[in-house]
Amino acid sequence: MSGPSPSDASSSRAESGLQSHGPAIKVEHIKKAYGDNVVLNDISFELERGRVYVIMGPSGCGKSTLLRAMIGAEEPDAGTVFIDGVDTWAADKKAREEARRKFGVLFQGSALLNALTVAENVALPITRHTDLLKSTVDLMVKLKLELVGMGDAADKYPYEISGGMKKRAGLARAIALDPAIVFFDEPNSGLDPVMVGVIDKLIRDLTIKLGITSVLITHDMASIFRIADEVLMLYGGRIVFRGTPDQLRTTTSPLVRQFVNGDPEGPINAPRQLAELSQALFGASRPVTGEYQAPGERDKP
Image (cartoon, rainbow, N blue to C red):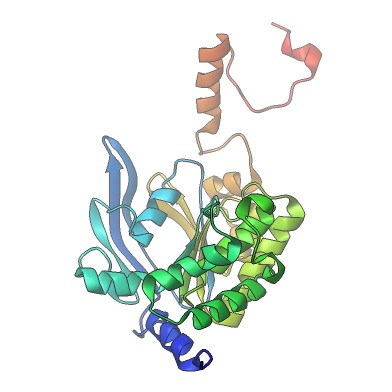
């Protein structure tokens, strides 16, 4: 029996690579509302190849909605998303499928199937989208697991490994078809600081080694400053900042600075929401200012 043909894997890689000479991703005038709540209001941007992009913003600002629109999981009310020049919402089914094969997704909870081993989970997108020989699939799975430092865990089940290992296994599956783009939905949620650093380094290394475009949805400021090439911030349904981490550090925007520094007071309306919640729960009559009060001072009239 002949061994796996290098041309099998390379043809899969060619099909998932970028073909056009434009941006890897182009979002054009995206709008999305749920009833009267406008979540995305005329969002437009382009993301170039081979860079790490972070989309950040307060909870409820539309980050996840934007991600779902980009990966084809939720259709926007208006606007278009181009993956390698293909309008993923207006194109025919075949063109949409070809465009969507160009990206992988690391979901927030890793989304591994507990009934399958780590290796079988990584093999899923390969067996679903190709007719490669099993020997070739096994080789591709082994290579991807080695890339993320999970070669020794191939035969383990998801319930037998740690949260950080699940993230790495999910990443191996996201890059199984050698995508040109990888989306990361809160890749560091639930991880300890050391494992956060491990995942960050892995994302940065894979972006450089594989030449992929990485798009992260996160509000982990340490990670943002550590690995991002460029940062976009959403607020009020719009992009209120775009720039490098250095520009993020030195921005004079009160809104952006409040978010970056985690200040309780500022343009972002967290204090108002906290005051409303406090009044609803405890009947608080004085406003919440975010200022520290010593225990004895809290009871003073």
